[in-house]
Image 1 (cartoon, rainbow, N blue to C red):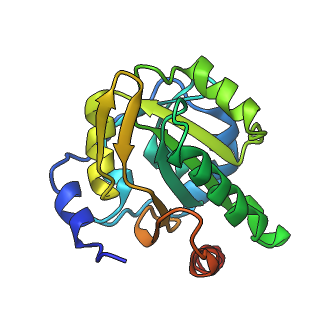
Image 2: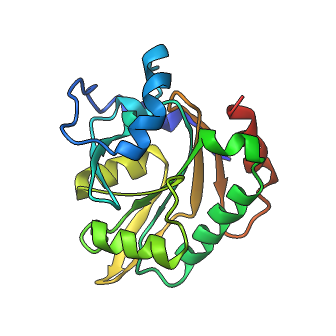
Length: 205
């Protein structure tokens, strides 16, 4: 896969945010608060330096740093996609099924919308229900167009709107360690995900 030096360049464009959000996703923070309190050190290459604000499918406002302490498996999609995105969802589900039961609690699967205008919290909730992804391990996020574009740059995901309802976009699944550092990427649809699964398992240790 491509080297990860780009993430350092992208992150250097953003200031570190020290502000707390006024409303937090209780399902996430309840599980991560004890882990975050023991290790608050964030490297220059961590996505937790990003000051962007995100809305979950439940309508809660969060910052990425609230996910600290879990291995993150992230992909960028949009819910009205009829081609690549359903296959990316299937790939994420396939990866999750291969994780041993004793490792599952340490992993968060995150879908970031590239179409925040259409993908409201209500639409993300409906999408999660349609795909039987209503458990807390599945997190859907939408942000501002600027924050979405910046975050896509960090993941090396390219996307472009080609019609009012369609986007062309990269098909990349990214894995971050507990400190928010990019550790592995899988590119393509329906590819052999053995290395991705092993990377996730190794990062949960």
